[in-house]
Length: 190
Image 1 (cartoon, rainbow, N blue to C red):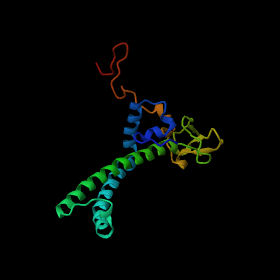
Image 2: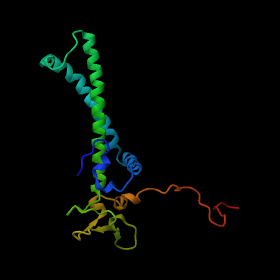
Image 3: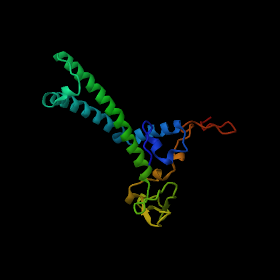
Image 4: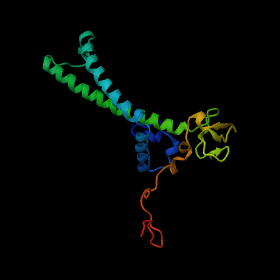
């Protein structure tokens, strides 16, 4: 696995064939499908870093020989201003770093989520089979192309959407719009 510094989706070879715009669109979809991991966790961690820095920095100044390494202002107002500025910088840096880390974790869950529990082979593109003619979710299964084991989708916690290859997951631009047939009929009553 590669370790990117600013584009978490470039860590996965599954996204190599995608353009930057497609990867950014997929990152937006990831924010919609996994909001707790990709949106809430980085913000919560940023707030916690700001609180920890606000409490920890004055304690470190009082109990550790910080003066030997960092020049501190002598006045109380100067130290308060330094605390305020350093808290903003530390929280912003931690927020951006944690946002990319949690986005990377979200991409990893998406990529590895549809894999065989036994051999970890990707199940992307594997057709969903069903027992009987009823659309019962408990009777839908996939067979791993590598080890040949059969898994019920509900048992391994994936949906048929998870098995669609990434390049086919987009919605067509005219989805939901009224389509006009070649003969001019729009579907409205005359």
